[in-house]
Image (cartoon, rainbow, N blue to C red):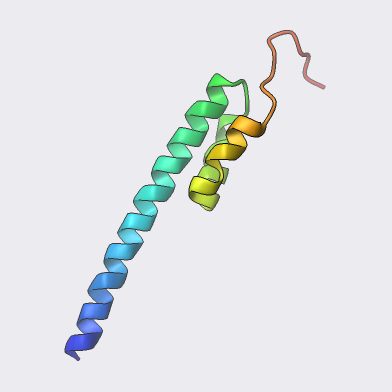
Length: 71
């Protein structure tokens, strides 16, 4: 029973750390996308779902210029 309690405590800690990383990646992706003219909501969701893997993708997407009309 003691082993089960230790495993439960470790899994809760891992869950909290994972959530904190996902939330921080979502915020960073959203901010970076907004500064580059992208859709911040879309990139925030991508940052939350994919975590650190979404951060480089924000930089790979071509930023929108101010003169591009929306289709």
